[in-house]
Image (cartoon, rainbow, N blue to C red; front, side, top):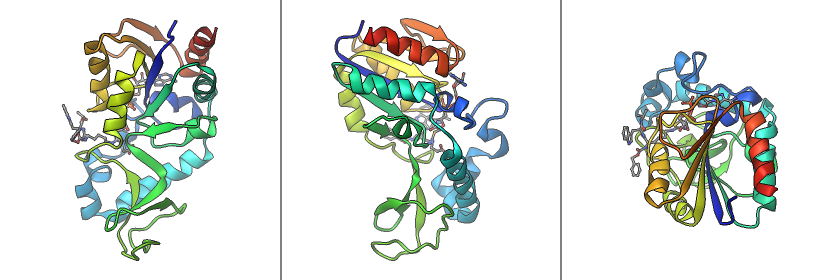
Length: 229
Ligand code: BV8
């Protein structure tokens, strides 16, 4: 079992059993909204109120959701494994932190945070956010959710690159592997000769050394028990 660092990339499937909809499932988020209408900087320029309503609703859902057994197991692994466990997530919810995880890298942002598009100041988001909310730092009325939209560069790419290089196990949990650059991390790990494992409801089409299919709340705690022995 892994003695060195463990790099864990997670996606919407990790939070599905907490009641947060995934993106591409039949009842996925992108069913109700065209990505380009709610998750691009152009959409925000065009109709900021529509985008704010979309994320105010996502924020309400995330606040009402509870961490599931998979979130808690990953927090336990990070606390008890005798090497670094890098929890990198594409999810904008805070369920890993509320599940007890101390360090979580949100490469696509955090729905509970607000960002000033004028001075890049960040602060805790109000429940109901409006673009005209004045920035607490520069007072500009250019408030947006602290989310990485399509066409924008994901956060912490340098930290993520170093974390992959520092790991000897790459684990992908609850992600369809369709959005880049996140979908390229597995390939990067394989190039570096790092063992790769997928834990997902159904196998994505990426080549992993090992694939375990099932619901995150079942297969993630079982895998963590194995690692912690
Ligand atoms: C960028 C925040 C330049 C918003 C998100 C190369 C090729 C093609 C396209 C591109 C490319 N490079 C860039 C692009 C464009 C684009 C892209 O990838 N488009 C796709 C659609 C083809 N990428 C970008 O625009 C990115 N920016 O490239 O900038 C750059 C990059 C690097 C360096 C310099 C410059 C920015 C992308 C980020 C966009 N923001 N989120 C919001 O959340 O509203 S992406 C968003 O969608 C999520 O964060 C996540 O990343 C993605 C959804 O995917 P998943 O999380 O995997 O969810 P999905 O529903 O698809 O799958 C769920 C999985 O869970 C399934 O497999 C299912 O089986 C499983 N599951 C379900 N239930 C369970 C389960 N598993 C276990 N248990 C269960 N119970």
